[in-house]
Amino acid sequence: TSTPPRDRSRNGSTSVGSTSVSTLSSRDTPPLTPVNGGRAPLLLPFQPAIEPQLAPVVCAGYLFKSSLSLFKGWRKRWVVIKDKKLVYTKSMDNEVEVFKALNLTDCVLRPHTSKMKPFAFALELPSKRTHLWGADDATTFDSFWSAIRAIKAGAA
Image (cartoon, rainbow, N blue to C red):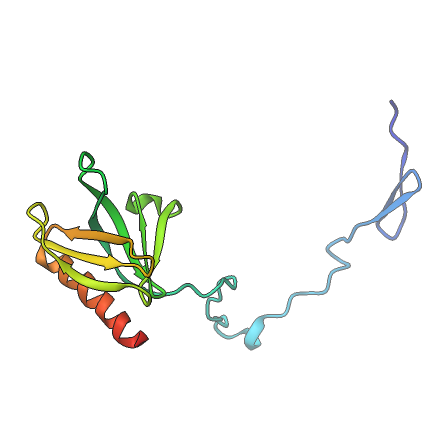
């Protein structure tokens, strides 16, 4: 295959075959004028790309969820409370694969006693399904308990 001949005219345009491409030389471009009269550069505030407003996280941490099966026991789950929902995943690194999101305004919060997890609570859904959650320590339990109670108080 042969390439079409290139012709260069005086105005700086190059024509390839029947197509003309315009090029500018340094003498054709106007000089740049400094912004702000040549003083210190004008700093504009950083404006990231517009993203949908994400709900703020009220509480996040690892809790243990009780399985219905007697053989599986308590499974460690990463739990985040945001947008009046309790969302849980397998781990903190895998927040994309959500197991379930429980609407906290519709559920009933109850304390739960367990020999395996002394710091536990139950969330009963309107469908009467109950989710049991346990914490390793009193601090984690108190933070989740108070966050859920605050959401329940605001919803009432």
